[in-house]
Length: 317
Length: 315
View 1 (cartoon, helix red, strand yellow):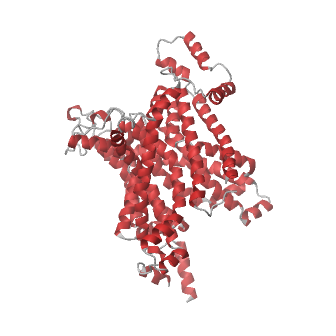
View 2 (cartoon, one colour):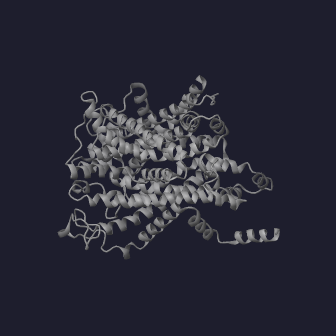
View 3 (cartoon, chains in turn red, green):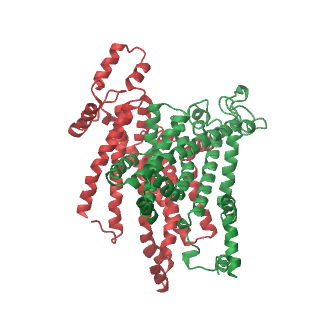
């Protein structure tokens, strides 16, 4: 197990390297030079200023040197650069924003499982009954109905019917835990619903497959109750592919938080990158992209590790 | 007896492939049929938008702005007094163009990358796969948003960016399909008689991985439509004057939604309906094309009472 973890950690290094190259190249090589855009945004910048900006940003040296400088700053000094907009270190913004996204994402992923797993299991146990059809339709509905629409509806209709408006100001968990949960629960529920559809379908399919195995028939013939057969014998074996799906959804989740944060005005990483992209604040954009990439890489690794704990039959060599 | 059965199979084989598929869809897959109908209506709306829409999508009716549904404007009007029904109809066109266009681009990319990596293998494959890994660990929506902000918004850009990103992700499946086909005896035989590599790829590999290619092509379309809407919602998708369902829910519209909730209601409903229909159709198509992915019958797999007809047929 330990050697497997070490090997996986080593394999991450080339991927991180390529991730950083993609971030770097996408942002600097694509037509529409940042400096030109900045010049057109601020009318009063003259040609002299343009050269000064290029020098300040380090655009006057070859690309590979720019890349090495950027990476060296990050690795050696932990310095991700300064925001072009506020001229403060990018990490200041990130530090304020990440707890919001983390809380939203965690709540969302938990709620998604709370919705998806029981419905998926029920749907498999009662295959081809009305309950199953309803559950499957609900799953497809969760996939088909876009989160930004449900989010919009959730904001509009309570406002019209009960004059209810969600708080604009961020309530931190430290200052008011209940108010904080109140603020996050609806956005997280919308996010969770969006994610639960896929998991629900996967859970149903896997349960159906497992329920046909010989050892399940043995369990039935021993006279065990349905609860024991389903929860103790079948569920554990059906859960592994479902966890894979949850792992795949992590990038989707991060994309989802961008939209949900936008609708509910939560000042998280998603809002940060949307604003940075609109301002073309490229140090900030590349930093956030790098952070997202790293987080997803680590989460995927973590989920791989999880298999070993859940299923003792899986051995890592 | 044997003659009759062989005749029957011969007749069945000669039936038109598409007609057979539609027939089986209608008889075996009620939800898939519903999806097929929605898909056809969606396509027809997009193609005949000019004839179906009562007004031009950007025509202003300033005096009747922010009105709910009425006889004159069936679905109501938005904050500038534009007819919502006409905008939804023209929005379908953008969705079809982006959905089909990006999925075609994605197919081309995934076949190129997947087949080459799977067929050549070795170091080339290893390097390509690390690259695919890296692309897959970005949240797709955010990566596309950043790229579109750099290349500029527009239908062409959206199609290309969505298509390429999806193609790179989808190449994984095509690669593994290629690798399993490559091991077949007929590929070895083709190599031994001296067929060139392009020959083998086009005559032996690609025809044999058509099923996953088609399945990926259709199942990707609803996801692409949703992503386009999300991008337009965030303001990085299709710019006006083109109408996008996602953009109808964003920007200045958001300030007026509390006064006129219909404005926000219809585009989302249209989007949900189309994504639902196309997904259902795609799923049914996958089940029919690739029976290995189909689930078994009966509760717990042991309940034979539920499908007496099918079982008697099999006997």
